[in-house]
Image (tube, rainbow, N blue to C red; front, side):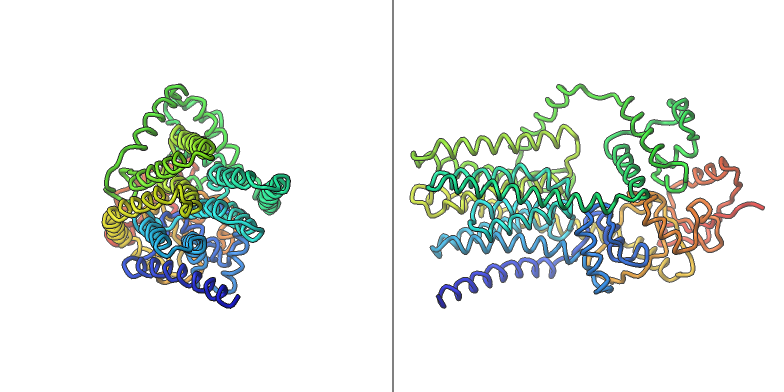
Length: 579
């Protein structure tokens, strides 16, 4: 018993040590970043930087998890809790896969081969995502880890752990978890089929049905709490605006004014107001509400020249096939996209499992049938993404990670089987080789991305320092002048109230923005811009004619005075009403 406890503790220490080495190596070579400005705004909301106190309503996350993170922020005001949370989720995923691998394999050499393969996969595939952290990909990692644990574990504790991981994933990014659920479902099906072949079939069936019921009940409760938390009239109205804004900006094209003048006039928008939709500064106009945004989104959808669905499916299928077999080194972090080495590793895993299954006549049909079903499911998910023409790497790489984790689980579950071991171990060696080949490329691309972000961020850092040095003033920033900034996670964490905001974006017109306006004594954005201590910030190459036209159309004659230039990039403009 004592020896067993020591072995368990040793396995935990080994897995934790390897995970720590990977993360410390990355920390020594790179700075951690929030990948997108979406994550930066989420951090600002949770930390209190946006309204002066941590906000439980995070808008993007479901309420229970955002409420919990905001509560922790209240306890640790100078800490980047959200950044730590995302990094901890990613570390935990790597740790759990490593720990389970070490636990289930007794042979030291085989254990070494498997662990080396996993470590090289982490470094060869995940490095960029571990440095430039994004909550969508983090959820995919958690879903993939859950799939791995489903296949390789057993007992109540394992089932409970899987449920907790999936519940947290759902709370962090519900849409991404729902996209990943078919992969997790295939893992559940694989394990059910494997266990159902044993004795006590009725008991096995009961256990798995209860497991599924508990999981989905938890998901429903999580969503129910979120719906209740956002059920007030103000939040209900904002969510309508949020959904319409998402539809218009993410899936449609804003109709131009001249061609669609009759439509815009029918809903009460003039040319200057429509321009606010184009430059994303729609927060300036109080008349652009949820009803107006919905009307524009629906109209844009109605006039959109849709490619016939058969043609879209055909084009997406061709792209899907290309991405299956196209192998190349990465040229940059995101664009132009490449799926290697992910697609190569997945292909090796499929082949290893398929060859191993064929070598074992007893249940080869079931294994092959499962692989075919899994490939069909992953193909349908990919087609859904490609037909919708929304395939950033935070989604596609996330989907491939989940698939890799599932296939790895099958390999680890059968690595000691006499009829499987040679093919599985050979497959893992090939995975190690491919991953190792891509490690230098991944590191180089990550370094190039770091250099590029540093270059892009330099003028922004000067701007935010300039703004921070003038707490008596308030600054409204043009939306498209703000989008290139990506924030370092653990540099100069302050979390004090920011004396600036952007004129649009996904938090615009939310109850949280209303609170921010009230905190600074403003009634609305339009009138606040004319206040004595309020300034407008825009990149020097961007025109401000739209701002003058907007106020003129509202019957207010204004003049713009450039009072400063920051980093030779940003104009600081005072908007004055002519007397």
